[in-house]
Amino acid sequence: MNEPRISRALFDQVIVPSYAPPDVIPVRGEGSRLWDQQGREYIDLAGGIATNSLGHRHPALLRALQAQADKVWHLSNAFTNEPALELAQRLTELTFADQVFFCNSGAEANEAAFKLARKYAWDHGGDARGKHEIISFTGSFHGRTLFTVSVGGQLKYRQGFEPVPPGITHLPYNDIDALRAAVSARTCAVVMEPVLGEGGVIPADPAFIRAARELCDQQDALLIFDEVQTGAGRTGSLYAYMDLDITPDILTSAKGLGGGFPIGAMLTTRRIAASFGVGSHGTTYGGNPLACAVARAVIDTLDDAELLAGVRRKSALIEQELHSLNSRHKVFRDIRGRGLLLGAELAEPWRGDAKRLLDTAREQGLMILMAGPDVMRLAPSLIIPDADIHEAMTRLDRALGDFTAASA
Ligand SMILES: Cc1ncc(COP(=O)(O)O)c(C=O)c1O
Image 1 (tube, rainbow, N blue to C red):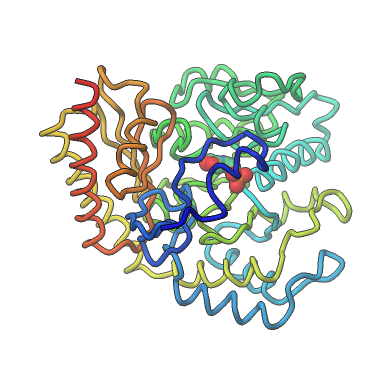
Image 2: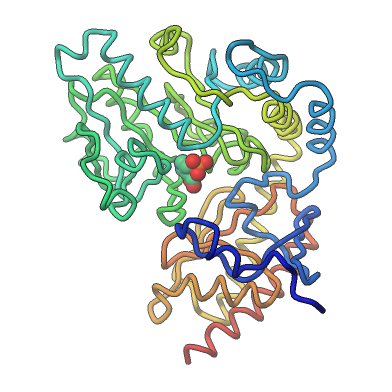
């Protein structure tokens, strides 16, 4: 077979070297399967990094995109549009929020949330009291704009980009005492992921989340939930906060909300949203009709108790299979997560080797993710067929065999 004209080598010539993709270039997807340029087939447990919430080529999403593509593609915020209004209405019906700000990515949704928290404090006399401090957590990830890498709790993403905006404090995740000691009258917001995603798939303790809510209430600070990765059904509820007995003040959503089409959203109450008056924040593509039409189809599909119960059942099935594989290969020291955001932490001799496990799995026809150098992360389609899960675990079994043999 002739080598395709568009190959991985071209990447190094024409793309800024901020990524290092493998040689494989997927060209087609269907459900939880992908095919590359050479026609090799893969099971996709990576899901575009927790983004293809309904797999590839879901008929409802295809229909929504094609129908909207025939009407109007873009208007900008000089006008509103029907898909944006309908999506915002659905999101506000289904969550605590009264109002929505649309943008194009998770980073932008968080950028909006952090700016809104500062502006809300300022509007309520906070500037006089120095109420601008944002508290976040070590290991957290909130995006790649300068503000979001600054709030994010991973030094490697902000090193070299300093000076970063001031007034940001990072605390250990799940440490209630540290949180109690740090939240003060100067705090304008506490921002957390309900499950640390990039930071190693670590769920927050319910007591930690409750403490954050109480401390924010005491100090009139806003609790921001970054649900960019956990939202849109990923944990088995439409949003993870719904299982946690608390309500955030601001919630950010992206990734799975678009099912593979770029969109971000910041959800909040009318009282807080009022601090973003006309002209205070914006983005040209925010609320794009194509993106909103697709996201509306995603939300309508996810608003289904049976589908969400399926997420929890499939999660238990994968966890059970991972434990069974681990009883033979003994590579993982911990298997954890919520819903279909699962992590398996590598045991001692294999720490730091998650990238090699990804490469080995791909050679066996399986796409998986990492969450830092020590953790294998799985974020498949929320409707992945059980048969694909079983086949994926068979391939992972072979991959783990190769992985441990190569390091023996
Ligand atoms: C929790 C969380 N927040 C924010 C982001 C940034 O989203 P985006 O890459 O769409 O800007 C991510 C992306 O991985 C994420 O996992």
